[in-house]
Each structure stands twice: as C-alpha cells, then as structure tokens.
Image (cartoon, rainbow, N blue to C red; front, top):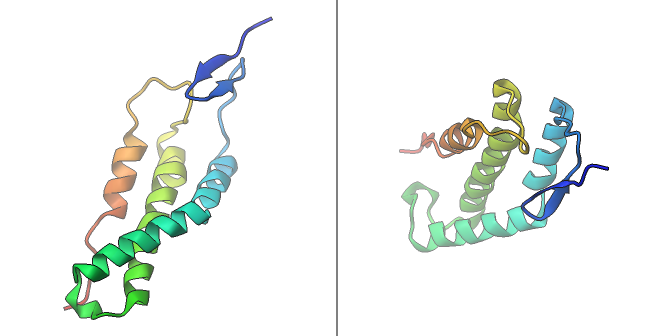
Length: 116
C-alpha cells in the first residue's frame, strides 16, 4: 500500500490526479467569496480611507471597500483559476516555478484608476 505524500497539512493521495479547470474555478470562487476575504477587504478599505489613498473617493467608504474587494477577488481568480488553467499549472505535485501566482497578483494589482 502506498503511503500518502504529505504536503503542508493535507495528505496528497497517490496516484495524484490533477484538478480539472472547473474544479480550479470552483476553489477560486469559494476563496473569493469567503468571509475571511471580505474581512480582509474591510481592513484594506479602512486603511485606504484613513490614509486618504484615493482623494477622488473622498470619505465614501463604499468606494474604498468596492475597490479593495475587487482587487482581492481579481487576485484570487487570476492566481487560482485563470492563469493556472492557461499555463496548465497545478497546486500540488508540480515542481515548476509558480508563474500563476506572480503573474496573477501582478495583474490584480495593476493601477486601473481612471479617476482624476
């Protein structure tokens, strides 16, 4: 009997089966709409409002929250679903460099502010 390969805190079953694209999108969606993700966006929005990081937003918290939450959701989807599917990368059992994480977060952090 083959013992499971331990990675992080969860055992990986042998033989390893790669995730199909729909499973990657399901995981990314669950992470993007998790209450922890919302809490993180609340914190980022509060910090941005306190420092007045986007003066055009004024003191409207909803604009800061929408911007912060959008950034987090786009980052989740890009790093966990879209780029892994495009680049054929998996989360476990893959020894190649994780381009999906780097490119996905770079895409999400792009400065797309059109507010003057």
